Picture 1: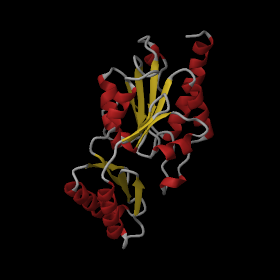
Picture 2: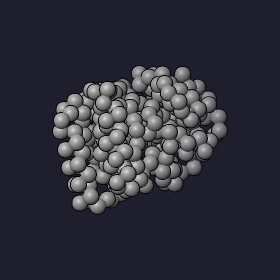
Picture 3: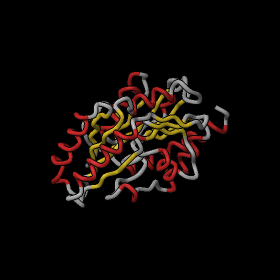
Picture 4: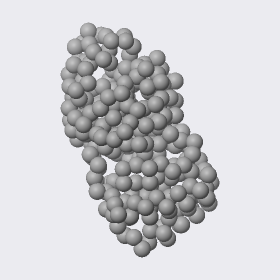
Length: 252
């Protein structure tokens, strides 16, 4: 378990950033089956009363809000291609609509003969899921690489049983850096929890600012520490809320 003293010893206020799938919520066979446990939401609500808290995810903002309801947190969706600042204003990267339609049609045609593969559209991004057919990883990779080669507007982002095509200018690292320029995140010691290769750029940004980075699960990472599972994240959040409660009561 991560020691609270390691977070508070600097004397800086804290700001928390969380990936969603595989961090706050268990991975599921299909994206729409994911949910955040009630106990985790309650801990997030307690944390957000006294600290900057944001979700930084590959999912669109609308989906993030659905999972965190009734909370409405600052959030970056589609790997930072769309984000809602702490004042509630939404910002989005835009790509040519005709190009997006052409890419979508090309992907649909390529996957038509593979019903065990899933194409997920995310406004200005696409996710190609192969969780139900891990033997088709090479096929999906080749398809995604072909799109990225033909359309430099996209960057290929591998993940857990998924290849995503996201706007080249968007990353979780840039999203976190952007939040850290705004109240209530500015001047805070950042803490970022994530589980996937998509989170590594975020870890690098937080490490450079002297913050705490937490890799959830196994795999190579630049994160400074680990928690073994989504359940461990939930338990840590609940413990963190309890440990920080006396500080809140004292007005710290």
